[in-house]
Amino acid sequence: SFTYTSTLSTEDMANLITYLLFITILFSFIFLTMSKETEYNPESYGAGSLKSYQCGGECTRRCSNTKYHKPCMFFCQKCCAKCLCVPPGTYGNKQVCPCYNNWKTQQGGPKCP
Image (cartoon, rainbow, N blue to C red; front, side):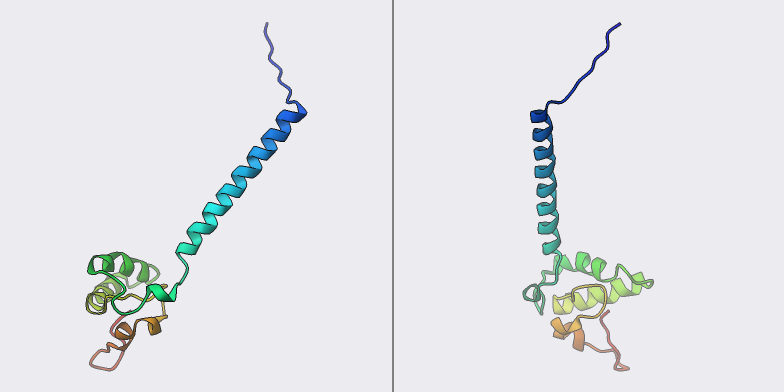
């Protein structure tokens, strides 16, 4: 009967630890780089900051936390088509899109979600 036993030398163990440390640092760097792309950047918002084809994706993001998804999407897309801007986040922050913020209903309430 054949039995296989393997022991790692000290050098092999050091190489393994170095490799695992490198992989951990690499993934940390990738994660941090990706998370910075989703942060609020005031220069990337404002009237005309979007192309009309981007409204669907931005409104999906804007309306992702509401229980009134269909009306939110309807009005968000209407506002985005007019203003070419959707505020960051799922709520508030309308000050970065004045057109979006200032468009009101006949009753004086906010038209854009």
